Length: 204
Length: 204
DNA sequence: ATTAGGTTGAGAAAAATTTCACAATAAAGT
DNA sequence: ACTTTATTGTGAAATTTTTCTCAACCTAAT
Image (cartoon, rainbow over all chains, first blue to last red):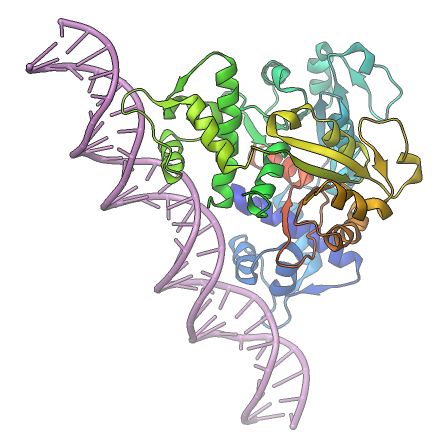
């Protein structure tokens, strides 16, 4: 089992490898992939060796082999269905992102409390919150993206959890109170922007 | 100077504290703030003491004092102007986010290569990429949010850097090649979602 | 005034993560 | 066949981050 930080790297490797493969490469060195993903060569090797992925003593790693190992690790043999709760701009942006196919993920529906957001001709169906249960069950969804405003986040999360959701990607700027069996991954874009400002030396 | 991980916590404290203040609280314990932000009480104290912020031996920390210390650290005495490059759904979502005011940040303009996205009546002006230089100079912008598709990201970044940008919040799923004096903060929502899936035990 | 209780502050320990250093070795050149 | 060279694989060291532990000490109660 990978650690949470390691997983991030592994997924970045996957992205980088797909790019390199598309460019026609078949082999890659730890150093090359490291440069492509912002990771040191040693760490790239450590990560792979932690999952029993072998390279060739002088010829680097086989890209197809790496990719299939990573796909095995990340269960990319079957499509994972996802729902988006909160169909504001952020929800739309995420649900329309083109990259889901490449990652064997599929946004099956959106939910919103605002009746104006429903029934619009949109690339995925957008339902009121009441329909959450049936959709989650019908599509066997276990992970949701939460893009509602701060004040609505906890309630929406409670709803999701009540319907059996096991993981939430939380884009709202609050820490959700959730039971232990539910995993929350918090991404706060405002914090990321402020952090950037601070460390880019713009302030002071 | 805070570390990159520490900064994330400090900014979360700030958000949590603003929330607690709005609820009428004046004092907070490390334990309380920790629960509000998902950080252990010890670490909350360590973070504060690293910046010389003192609490009261039995009465916790003064919220106003904490907030003003944090605002000093993060230069919140003046507004920081920001631009968004790529006015797709993600760019729109970020530029419309209501929370910027509270954080003394201001999105002054958007840029897009697509003429259809320009001149629309929108809450901020959207210019073609050619205007980047003048806007960045006029508004003294040093940090940009990059929300263009993968293939356009490096070129857009090069443009920004050429115009003197010092920090980029990169939402595109590529590692940008940038000179040392430019700081990039990469946020990859696809990776965050996949990571969540992996660790929520949904796979396998 | 004295005592009891609860919280900070910080040094020490532990844990996690990353880098260092280099032996092993496969490939390529001579 | 032999040598050189480049790269992996991995233990050891270093660094970073977090938790543990507890003395110091303020506040409130008696």
